[in-house]
Image (cartoon, rainbow, N blue to C red; front, side):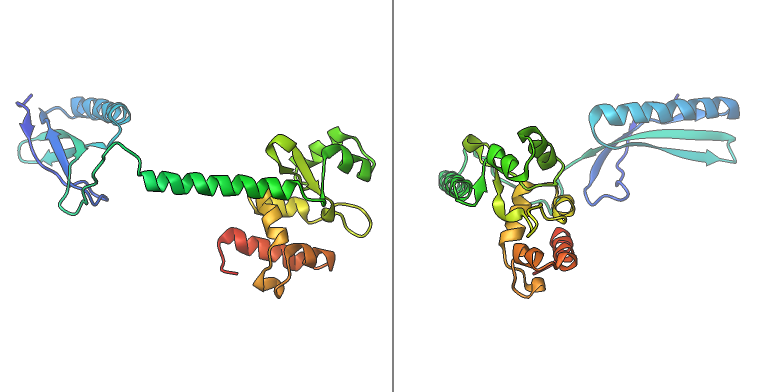
Length: 228
């Protein structure tokens, strides 16, 4: 076994420099080489998982000397010239924190206004309107068959306008929930917002006019991040 030696290597597939430690072992016997090669491979996997960055090894074959060389290389990220230093003061920006707190307060106020609207029904009232139990309504909410938005202290609220002319929840609701990340608030915002691809109509208006295909296409586009 040769004495440990230090060498520098650049990690392939990475834009950052690495500091590498190399250890070389010469194994003249082919059988012994295969055994040690497998051992080094397993050691590299274990080492990489433990330290959290890449570990590799280089194999060199010298036909004139009749020997093989295994060189494990532990790659450690080091600072590069194109890295921008970031000053960590340890203290949050007071102005930013104040702006975020104000935004959160506005959001809570807006949610309270929405769920307090006359078009929002409690689970009991919505269940009575549909002629089913509250348990059934909540089960259908969880599967996206009906739209129920979380009103925090008020509990879930169910927009009465999600019912079609026959008094049944719009059939497109499950697909809308699936397309928009199973987020009830995302579905709500989609339905009450106007969309250029729907000729300026809200999603709700388009559903009321029976244009389900266009509504689902608009929701799919929104999920992809298309501009509307």
